[in-house]
Image 1 (tube, one colour):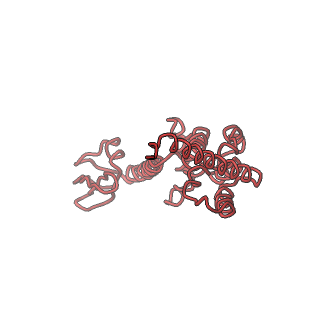
Image 2 (cartoon, rainbow, N blue to C red; image 1 turned 135 degrees about the vertical axis):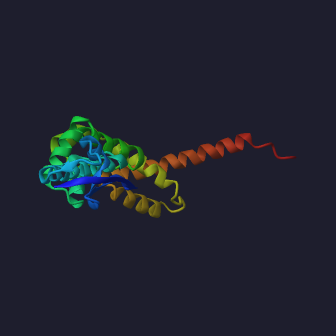
Length: 226
């Protein structure tokens, strides 16, 4: 038991309130907990109240940590649990936080899987097999992965993945071009057949573009003086 003699807000990684009991620093609380409980100077706290504040604070800390993690990018439930465990939060506390966040629509494995697929397709295309494997590692259920990832077109993904890379490769040596671009696509999980077809298509498309540019250049060039 003790009497609250001072409440001091300090700003670090989020706001916290230092609680002084009988002129001595007793503990700190997340600002949300201090405000919710309506702590005031002059208030007397029993041991039971102090213990309840500690439990509420632990839950709030876990919630704040989860929200920070979700602020970087969406995460699967399994991934979020793993990260919270690393920070020392127990399973029971995690469960309560995840129930709250799921109810708010902030944790949703189906939405996360769609986000992951769209992000990969837009910036770093992968094969359907590798995308499935990545999501499996994130702890997403098989049925959700199949539903969202099942329609990925490996031919289209491989072409888009190879297109940007191909611009940085020299075209003077087809074998070197084929080998380097093939290795690039292999690391992204594409099959031999898809890689072979994609490399050949990219090579032919670039060759056609060069011919067209050369033709346009000749057509627009001024006539040579006689």
